[in-house]
Length: 225
Length: 365
Image (tube, rainbow over all chains, first blue to last red; front, side, top):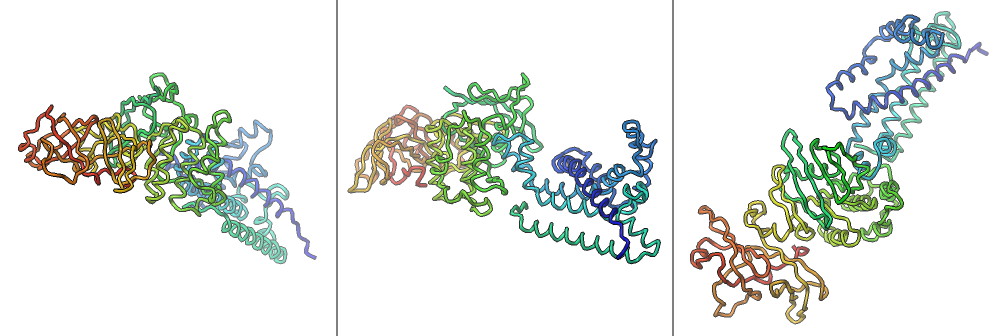
């Protein structure tokens, strides 16, 4: 029997789950704004949101490390507020992942809201629905495929992150030692059997999640074109 | 008397909408004009989907907009039903749920129209459990009309709602739209480029051109105004006459109609004696004679008329329009040559000949 610590796996799922939740809360209003605004700032915001796609994770990690540090832009106020630092903690990791995976949630939602368009919303308003009501009862259900894609991509992208975690999370068991780091560790110490097990597990898991989602997606009744 | 008061001034990149109107809010108010004249924008302003920053709008005591006092009631609170040019059904909801969407958001005390009524009149019972994507265009539009009606609105806005329907379906829905006002007291602002629909439905007409109102008033007046004739296509110019069916002549297949100036015979029309019927007498189907014909004529309708006004004489155009009074306005298009031969002048007594076959009521166009 292998001496396998499943802690990193559990931690990784927690991190990806928490990140997706935060991203949906932040990403929905950003995507909504991008889809419907006529402001010239739109292109700037779009470019900023897309940055993590092109930046090497280490660059992003480097800036995040500074921002999350005890004297950083985010870490400073956080430390004053809670007494604990952000860097090298689980909370800091969620924050970093949020930036890192932002485009993978915002872009599908943006596209989905654009596909829904203004017309059904106007119809809902004229039928007595407030803007918020129309968002929840018309726009969101019509954008359901966009939400599915956003959740899957956000989750999967966070699952696979390495560089950013290494920079801002370090390698603290139970705190910041996620799966990808654990695999790296095993390889470093030539524990190929453990590395194999974790890698194969992650591979199989990712495949099954994607398969389930795409199957569900196919069966959804709504087609917004 | 209920009134719709409107004052909009809105500048777009392509045109300038300037509408200042007070029209009776009864029956169907048709908005007519060439495409791009601002008909749809006008409707969107009424609904509150566009906002004219210096505008005002009121229906009776509902003041929905008065920018001088900072009043702007947003669309959901206006109690306005809007039937868009395209159905805009919610694809994730079944037909029944689409119909109930606005109904659920209408105060119980304000619901005057029931699901049963709407389902029956629009003949949509078989569609209720389907998804919108499984419906034809005409079916979808009927659901959209029903959905708007079920909010029991104070004002119904319709943007060419029948343009996607086939003729039999149009004929089915038209009488229902006519009844809306008398049954539910819902005035309709009805945008259309189809004069047949307007002749059929409208009590009041608003003519728009390049964002400006070029004429508004009772439809009989608008259709018999010579100075608006350039806005109305050639083969549609003609006075409207409201009549009552008084006799069915089975032997010759004719229906006799009474109107304020006498009687008219038209090809058989299956309506009951006593029913109201609006007919249009196209100007090109009216000819004039100065004394009663000494020869026998095949024309059934020969009416005494007085010349009221002679239209603009354009030397590049062989025809001229004459406005007559036969107890109600009547238009005739004759040649310039005839005008000279007959020496027509206002006040002159003439006879108007109308070929019976020309008197086809709106529904039979």
